[in-house]
Image (cartoon, rainbow, N blue to C red; front, side):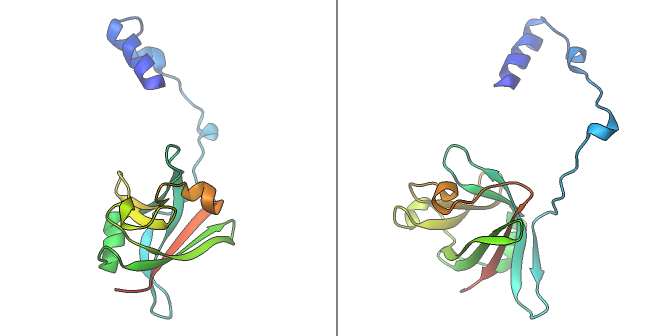
Length: 153
């Protein structure tokens, strides 16, 4: 881990904090075209959550969205309620299924997909004892969009 190495050098006095200063030219800064995940109502009156898949959990293959829990809570869900999850890559639907919102992965059978709230309090998608990413051939990044629609209460 680069932070541990740099922290040890700083703590031991081998380097100073100012040794890490590097000015980047403004033209080298890149802004990602992502909007914060949000709750919205369609023109037909259908409540949805829309966002992007920001991160693939490299340890478990779960997908973490940029939809914050405060937006997710607007659905007023209980554990066991189901949502239609659509994941798109560059406008092409790569995943479209109905998944349960669970408290723990053991709320579904091994190999089954699910929705949960991850450790950074955003909406996430996983598979009990499996990898959502590998099972459904989906990924993360600014070109990966997700839409959730409430199916049951």
